Amino acid sequence: MYTMNVEVPFESERHAEIALNSVIQDEEPRAGTHIERKITVEGNLLKIHWEAEQARILRTSAQSLLQLLILVTQTIEQFDGME
Image 1 (cartoon, helix red, strand yellow):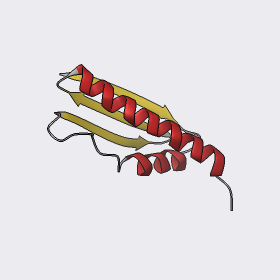
Image 2 (cartoon, one colour):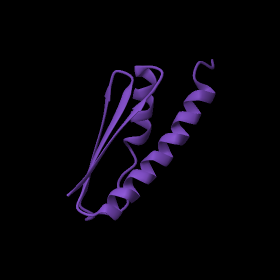
Image 3 (cartoon, helix red, strand yellow):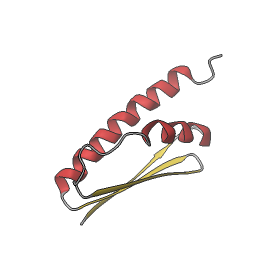
Image 4 (spheres, one colour):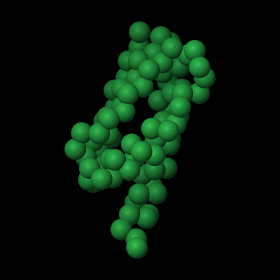
């Protein structure tokens, strides 16, 4: 079993919650890939935990989610605080 943990710091807990709500809807690419992903927020940290039977599947899932997080972070930076 392969595992991976990532903690992404945000400026505030609210930003971490926005990121969580944005990425939580992103499902794993294929059914039956034997991968589990848990995403939580603790304070200003977005915590992601993966478990997969194959390293390739873990890498693909992590890469996809991290690319989405880059977009979410850029969006937060651009639009946060705008009325």
